[in-house]
Image (tube, rainbow, N blue to C red; front, side, top):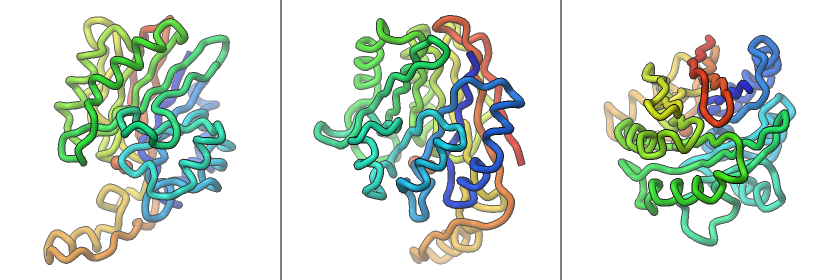
Amino acid sequence: MKILCIGDIVGTPGCEMIYSQLKYLIKENDIDFVIANGENAATGNGITKEKAEKLLDSGVNVITLGNHAFSKPDSAILMNSGFPMVRPINLPEGTPGKGYIIKECNGKRIGIINALGRVFLNPIDSPFDAVKKCVNEISDKTDIIIVDFHAEATSEKAALAWYLDGKITALFGTHTHVQTADERLLPSGSAFISDIGMVGPYNSVLGMSKDVSISRFVTLMNKRYAIAEGNCILCGIIIETEGKLPKSISRIKIC
Ligand SMILES: [Fe+2]
Ligand SMILES: [Fe+2]
């Protein structure tokens, strides 16, 4: 089983790259299942119904979210009507949607969990407690478990991966939009990478206009962010599994 995980898709340029490239990428790499982080797919963050549906039509099987999960109202409506989308599991009780989903692929049951970090982000329940509880609950009902840990700090991401080592197939980080080069298999077998990167304009600051970003840092005035233009970069990982544990984790980065 080969699972492709794609980092934060940024705005219309990022979505357009997925619409045009994903089917080739799936074919070229014999991909069976695709997980993509869609929390920045809409202009101004969040995700719209139209973009979510087009991402699925392009080959994405499950969309994960993050701190911008509800920046657009569509995500709540979609999740409440059974759309394959997950929001962070450690959000307060009563938040629309679910923090995990189980999907079947080639006779295997794949559990996908989304969680949000607490370092340099808004206060929230412990991702360690929430994810561990979920893993314990779904272990018997799944063959593979993948965690998208949407967090800022590499330390928090590494700690959660070590905490779950051997109990999950893989944990990958999202949110920073910058791919890290620390992919590895941990001693008890789980795959880990701090951040898989983004799908968005290459000549940018995390997908946003570099001029606006520079101006915000130089002047400290909150000029409105704008999505950058130009060619995109597509970042992600491919996890190859053998039973519950992975055989390999490899990075992809396409310009
Ligand atoms: Fe993001
Ligand atoms: Fe984020």
